[in-house]
Image 1 (cartoon, helix red, strand yellow):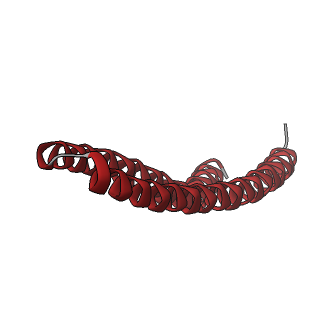
Image 2 (cartoon, one colour):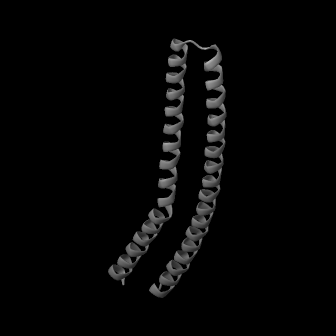
Image 3 (cartoon, one colour):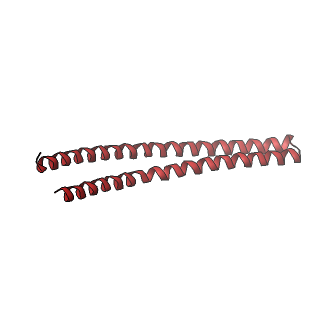
Length: 124
């Protein structure tokens, strides 16, 4: 088998792999955009619910709660708020990792191409 045929085959294969990588990167970017929009909507609805809850809780506490109950309720609310904040922080971390995926995939593709070039030099 002639090396020119092998090189042509590898070149065609590399173009196909490159096209697939670009297509996947575009899909990944679109999914990241959709996820970001969903996160923003969720954050907005959480803030609205939190504001509503806080207003109603304050009204209720003013009229019906003792000091001990208020303190207990406040600590529970803070614990729940900490849970929400940790969830949002985890989602932010996932978004940051997702944002780096195209760069990582690009590095992998560059290394594959470099290894193929080194293989061609050695065998050529």
